[in-house]
Image (tube, rainbow, N blue to C red):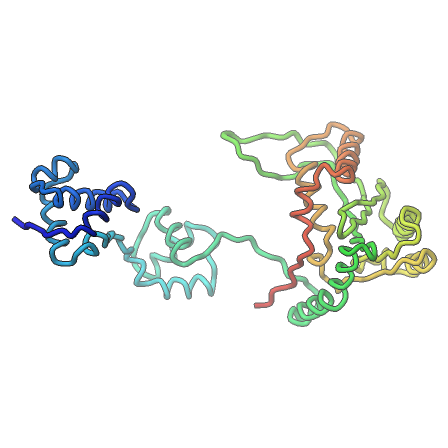
Length: 349
């Protein structure tokens, strides 16, 4: 039987790490080493440490041959999937034509490799080995302008025009507002909740619409808005410009707008000059640079998704009340996170 000579240093090491080792296996090994240093025989060590006697013999031999390091080495067994040999082949095929669901991925893996695996195994392989995520499609603008040109235009606008304005807004030198219209409809809006059972929501008859022209401050997130059941027109934009000037007399006002025809017209231009308001038009097809677009999605999530309003008046009151809550600061924490002044330009890769 192996009889180790255990140094005083290793004895003290084992005495400490039998309690405070980084894993149960290390603690067991150090406990056995501690007992052997105390003079206990292998059988007694196995009984006290609650391990098999063969383990005591194996660990003792490892200590004699490799010292303390032999007991600290833990070789864990990790099985390797048969699909690992085909990783590059599968990844290249999936990058060329991404599968739309796990069942399609399973079918194509079998066609490529001849190996049939369960759905759970396929999901784990695609997620942890290929490092793929289940993603939504991202829309790219239509039109005739090449995407690379539009991406460069957005990046240049962000750097040369928008960021300097936002810097002024943050420092309080100027008031920068993002302007856009939203058109909520009184009907069913899909949403998600955590629930044991499906949640059913009543739908409203008809398609009553509320039109909102909003201007959201880039720094304070205060929302100025005009609501109507009529169409949003150039006169509505001019009314908003006049309203902002009345609310902020003497201030430097910049409005960031998209290229809607009712905004980019002579009437709006005249109103802006009259009230000394600077209009800044976004590049075409650039809703990603309009901060208020995020707010409209937030409004739909909080007020419309999964809610039923029996009457048109209830529908309008719910939206108006939510806008009042925003201006009273009741959603400040969520909006500060959502409305950060970081913008993502088009990705052409």
